Amino acid sequence: MIKKSMFFLLLIAFAACKNEKKVAISAQSIVDNAIAVSGDSLYKTKKMSFDFRNKKYVLLQENGKRIMKRIFKQDSTIVTDVKAAKFTRLVNDSVVAVADSTARKYDNAINSVFYFALLPYGLNDAAVKKEYLGEVTIKSKQYYKVKVTFSEANGGDDFEDTYLYWFNKETAKPDYLAYKFFVNDGGMRFRVAYNERYVNGIRFVDYENYKPKSESMNILEIDKMFQNNELELLSKIELDNIIVY
Picture 1 (cartoon, rainbow, N blue to C red):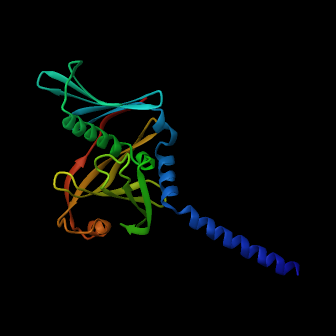
Picture 2 (picture 1 turned 120 degrees about the vertical axis):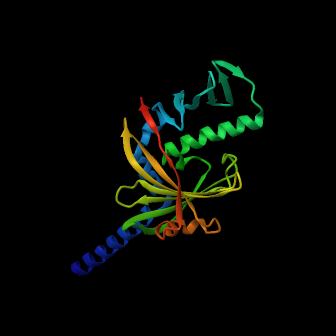
Picture 3 (picture 1 turned 180 degrees about the vertical axis):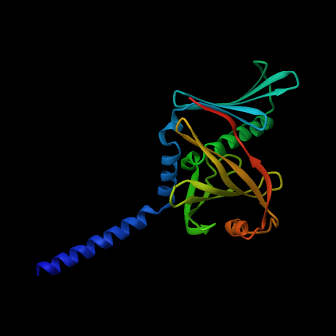
């Protein structure tokens, strides 16, 4: 009788372990693990700066709010674009008027640079909707594939875009990402992360940026297209002179 009881207890324990494993593999837990190994709480407190395509980007944290800046030379002047509660442009430290449509364009451009630079942190923003698509193999490595879309509320001008992320099962980090966008005639991109480095506890990577040879392909199949050499290298996304403090 005791042996039978022990046997049933073991069966129950085994079933519980299996259920726990299934619950653990969810889009939310995958993203949470990725953030934990990439910077975790440091994303909320650290300030930083980096150079990207001849412009300097600065992130400040003030009273729990983020202030993002883009600084560059334009002829003989210094232009500073500030994304805070509202967009502001300064030319040689003097505020200049900017049309609402232009301000929105610049605001979105700054946000986009920081979004990619700080991935995977932004994947827990309020507007993000995540869906686990299962496991896939890319170049003999196992990945969790996650689809990301955005709610219209707080989702920005690009809320209709679709993103995909491939999280390495061993490291928990996103080695690949892809997205389908609709602005400027639309298109699809596939990015391969490389040159990983940690600066004061926060992970940064550069990307090889690919596009499909045929834009008619399904974004959900873009990882297969990558492995079948159906993508072409478009550019490289590189961050320089990274400082975190």
